[in-house]
Image (cartoon, rainbow, N blue to C red; front, top):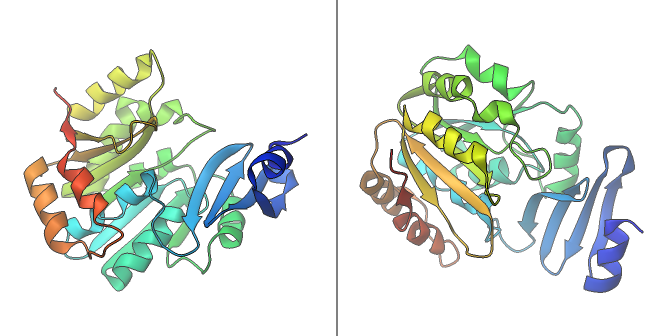
Amino acid sequence: MGLTSFISGLFGYDKIFEAKEMGAVIVKHGNEKILLLNNAVYSKLRYNSIYTHSYWDFFAPLPALFENSRVLIIGLGGGTIPFQLGKIFGSKVTIDVVEIDKNMPKLADAFLPEKMNSNIIIEDGYSYVQKFSSFYDIIILDSFIRYEVPEKFLDGKFVDSCSKALKPNGILAINYIVEPADAKLQSFKENVSRLFNMYTIKYSTMSGNRIFICSKTMKKEEIVERIKKNFPRDKENSFIPKVYGKMQEEVK
């Protein structure tokens, strides 16, 4: 019995789309829609909201740090992050998404309620980012093979390339799943801390996801202040600035 059949029978998940050749399935659970790829969660959305109340939401305020922002997202998934940024900021944000798998845009089209306002580039993000100098305001790394970031995105060369591709006050934001006795994480933090002020968002004690907010020049206080001032606020997203206010600095 596959995962989808199992969870459908026990927990009320309903399959609404499947691409067997990719190991992909989209399921509905309550008011949530979830994209599974080889039984790992790659995207989530709510039917009545653009917020997921999970890690995706903590990339949403980053364009508020700039008057108009150019964003590079490495890793498309089902398109949750570019969809959120486009809905919140509209023409104030330009979004490039680089994705190595040519089939992922088809899954994103099936998953999202409407078309993304993003430029999709089919290429390896590791090599793509090396082409630019002082071009992006924000780089978001959300690339996974199941629940691990590919090791090449943790090395010093990639961090150097991101720093070069970012404008002088740019932001590198990283989704990372912390595992017990994770030897790679400390080395990665050291690579990042050479070039960035590095902060950690831990939004839930139940989740292993950590969001690293890495700034070339801005300190925590300036990041939080700009988000409070410029991030479009409503009753549902008020938790996001609060969590930013609690982010912790990584000691170099």
